[in-house]
Length: 211
Image (tube, rainbow, N blue to C red; front, side, top):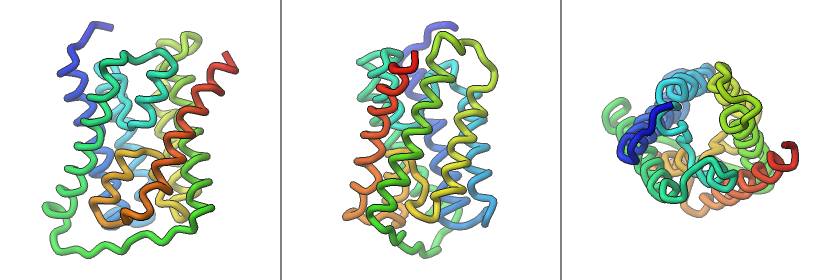
């Protein structure tokens, strides 16, 4: 794989995160895909991973970036810029969905049971990061052609299983997009962000323990 500049990697992260968040905001938040929203989200994630994974690693998720850095597969200098770009991309995607694709459409804030939502976000963020570490960063699976599908199917499974409980974010950048959209209120941000980052860190430990 050829070396790419940080600018190239950040552009790739922006594009991938933007379209992932745009699909979530359009298909799920505004309901354009109805019951098929999880499939639209998983499909977008998968094609973006295959599209730019060779450039940036296709993190599209601050919790993933932190985990891959802790695992030793991401440069320290890339961590803060990746996270910044991911959050910006998510916010802009939410604004684009609301103001371009669904102007004047009202959105209802998500009502979450705190304990259930914490558990949902923790468990499926853990599963997502653990799978990513194994299929995209492990020497034992290096060069495989299924990594994008494997990662996307974790998100699909999570969205179908616990989307109704927590919104099925599993991603701080997506949580930011949901906040901008009005789905997640400021007082509830921690219910997503805390378990997402903790799950990512614990997934690194689980990955190292199984190698």
